[in-house]
Image (cartoon, rainbow, N blue to C red):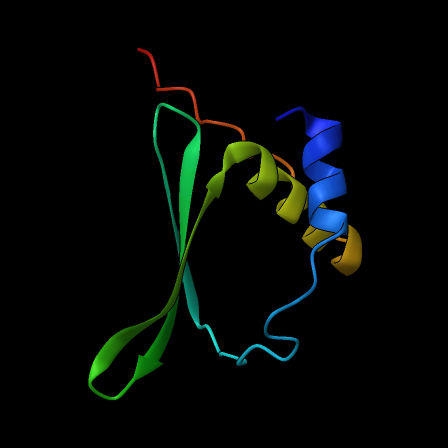
Length: 89
């Protein structure tokens, strides 16, 4: 399916659950695979420990799009941290 056809198919779909349940996340964990698939885990802290609230599997491309939307919405664009050079004698 081409990207244009995929977008048209998504545009024509109706939401089956227009009000999905809300969740609270204290922590996020991200895992990536070599084939471009990513897993984003949303975790909540409770007295008994961490509880996984949701697990989202998506492509790297879609996750980058999500990050772009988050950064734009928060007007926050983090800069890559510089690595420290080892001290030489």
